[in-house]
Structure formats: C-alpha cells, structure tokens
Length: 77
Image (cartoon, rainbow, N blue to C red; front, side, top):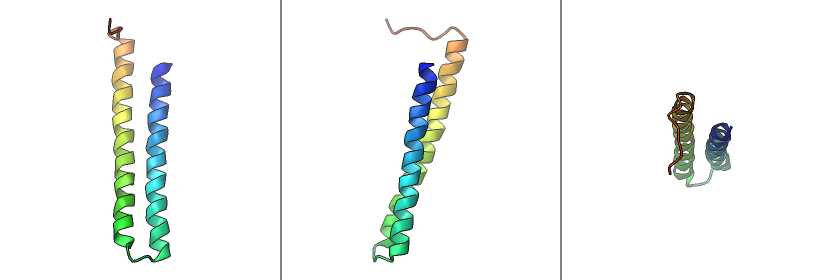
C-alpha cells in the first residue's frame, strides 16, 4: 500500500510540473512578451522534467513491486 501511495505522489508531482511548463510556455507565448523564447524553453524544460520524473517513478514502482512480490524486500536493519 505504501508503494502505491509513493508512486501516486511522484506521478502527481510530475503532472504538476508538466502543467506548470505548459502554462508557463502558453501564457508567455500568448502575451507576446519579448522573452518568449526563454519562457517557452523554460516551459519545455518543465515538461521534459515532469515526463522524466513520471518514467522514473514508474520504473521505481515496478522494481519495488517485483521485490515485494518476490519476498526480497526487507527492512534495512
């Protein structure tokens, strides 16, 4: 159960980063500010970072799930 909650938290954070990136790029693109390229690039960096975070969270979740199901997951003590 804790594995699923951790995964959900990472995916929620990744989606927030993606939404922030899209909103940032879209707002400054529509505003026609002189620094449009910089903010679009920054927005794209947030989108790529969020997507990478989602992929890594999925990898970590599946790895922990397989470890738990295989009885290989133990305490650190």
